Structure formats: C-alpha cells, structure tokens
Length: 360
Image (cartoon, helix red, strand yellow):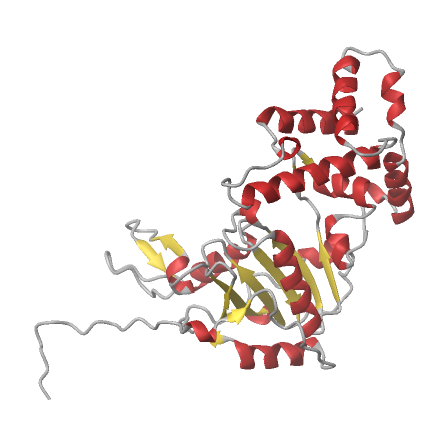
C-alpha cells in the first residue's frame, strides 16, 4: 500500500440517501402507543434518529440526534432532538411551567427539545451551524471545538455550555417544542412561511407537532399565543372570525390569562366583540366615520351576503386574503379574477379597518 505523505487525507462527507428521508406531512400519522412519554421518546429516538458527534467533555448536559424529512418541493427539513440533563444543566427550574401554573410539579431529570431551524435545509451538521467568536482573538468557534485553532485559547466548558443553552431561546426557529420527561411540555416557537420557512407552511408545521405529541404520549402542552398577522394580534383576529384561536384548530384552549382574566370573562369578551353589529358605525359622527363607512361598504359589495357583525366582516377579510395568497402562490402566469387581485392599497385598507375597529 502506497501512502502519499505530502497530501493530507480529506475527510469524507457523509451524504444522506433520499430514500432515507421521512415524509414530513405523513410522518407518524399511523403511530400509536400506550407507553409513557419517558419510554416512548427513547423508543422514538432509537428507531428514527441519528446521533450527532458532540464532544462529551464540553456538552455533558446535551445529547443531540437528527431526523431528516423530505417535503413535496424536494427540500430537506432536519429536526434536531436534544436531550438535556437537568441535573447538570445551567437551568434547573422551568420558567414556562411556573408561568402556566405547573410550578408544583416535581423537577424532572430530563428535558427533550424538538427543534427545526430556518437554516436546517440541505447539508451540514448541527456543530457547523452553531458558532460563536473566540473571547481572545475573535476567531469563529464551533460547538465541537475544545480550543481556538488560531490563538490556542482553551474553551471554558461551563461558558461554552451556557452559551449552547442560550441558543434554546432563539425565536427564529421554525419549530421549538420542549417536553419534560413527565410528559408535560411547552410549544415555544412555531413559524411558517412568513416566519422564514421556504417549504413548510405554519399549518403543516403544526400538524407535524400535533402528530409528534400524539405518538410520544405527551400529556399536556402549553403555549403563549403572541402571533401577529396583518398588523394585529392574530389570536384576536382568528377568534373573532372563527370563534377560536388558530391553535384551537388543534385543540388548544384558553388556559391562564394576564391580569387574573378568567376563561369565562375571556369567552364573554370574544362573543360580545364578535356579535357587535356594524350598524353602529353608520350612526356615529367622528372624523374617521366617512372613510370607515366607505371601507365597510366596499367589502360589503364584494360579499355575496349581508355583513351584519364583526364576525361576518372579518370572516370575509380572511377569506379574501386566503384566496389572494393562493392565487399568488400558484404562479403569476395564469390570469385571475379582478376581485382576487389585491393591490397594496387594498391591504392597507384591511390593516386600517382592523386597527380602527379593534381599538374603537
């Protein structure tokens, strides 16, 4: 065997075979288990996940796996499953449990994070995606680096691990769900195309999370609905038009409100706002009334039925926006109806109408 000592060996890049990719939209659709979460998640990882080569001395509290998925447009989506050892973690107590009222639960020794990042499309390992500058020379360090290759400074394991834990607070993830080993979890981040996804919609992402929770026997999941859409709180816009929040399509209900608001008070406020008649805007005289009346009459002309309440009006607005987005996503080659072609002025009218009505 001849060895060339003048040329270093190249590290072979592992290529993922397309046949190994799971279908993102149907993954776990027929999977059911009666096992508790702490058992089900280990079986899930053993069956579907591939371990990542984090350095044990630096990351004693974090063990990470990857699962790759294929989507319809040919893109690859990667989910990271991170097992966090709470006993050696920098953050032992869960603030999310305290906020939602689960502070009385015993502290579990394991947490599992399910993460899909916006840049988790294509090749590359997790270690290459997480980077930080060296505190001595500013050179870029990866998670796998135990020292700086430029200045030779040794990485402090505790500081490095604290930095890695801070990455869990990134709000730019497409999906970040965290589940304690007792089966109680929190949906911390969920974004669709408007949040940076190039291939998966918010509904598809939520369907995936819902199937994952069902397959792993997750008991309860909390979330803080702070979503914004069309210039206003989407939880309010969707609730007025549909009678429930967008997350309510997957069974999420009002849990705990700010300023001691009860579920009964919340439901009563939603019902009152939804059934408020639009006629009140035609019998009040303010500086904004003529323009507001014109906007309402404009959308009344587009509706096939009478718009009597806020719910009727906002249902129409959401339907028109949905039809417009569908026409836009279907390529602009085809000719669409003039009633579905929205200009920037139309969108501004919706934002103005929404803000005026809600803050009236």
